[in-house]
Image (cartoon, rainbow, N blue to C red; front, side):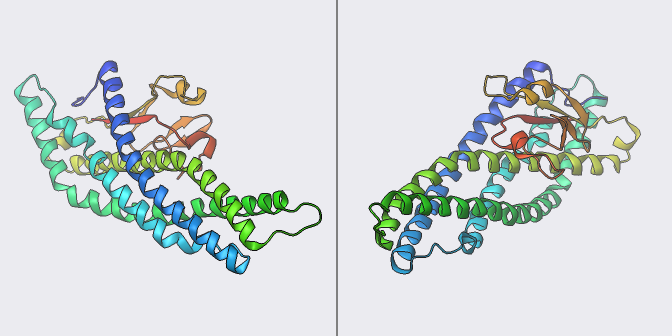
Length: 284
């Protein structure tokens, strides 16, 4: 029995609605990251001018992890209610359907704290891992701009002062980090949203199958890959559009396995996940 079986048009409409919501979250994270990276650049300039050293960006890991964790929680608070909202808007044709939907709504209410606890644990791990990766890249960018500044300022066998290098490299560092913010915000928001919807669907599936009423019915928990359908969609994701799998199964996209768009937990590469705007729609 399909309860929240969406039509193709409904899936497209929901994907567009969720894409707009994700963009709002992305803007919020971008604003925080602008401040974070500007502060990092200011610290770099002072340190290099006085000591001639760049330091390790990983010392900012705790600060960045907090920013990401709080952002994930805000995103998760919205997207972990995907099925809950869908159930509330479900129209049923007869009394039996009404009974099933009511039972599912009750099961969903029971697992609210479980979902919150699971996401908090997952988001904590994600915030540490992702901040480490982001700051590893920041270290590379910092080294590159210092080298470029030293080469640009070293002419006629003269050696630039630390202050000169700090000023020029600092400007380049601000520019390069600013160009990274959009990608970071989009990818981190997408990952948090996908994890939230997957967690809700997985836990509702487990809970529903323990229910005496629901356990006697065939409940087809599934999810569908939905691409945004514009010219920004990469070819592998366009091909994956409409692919349907079980709720705890993985999509096969571009020869790689993903639990949801932007998921890297099963080894999917960055070319297949970074800046992905696709959506997995979970249904019952």
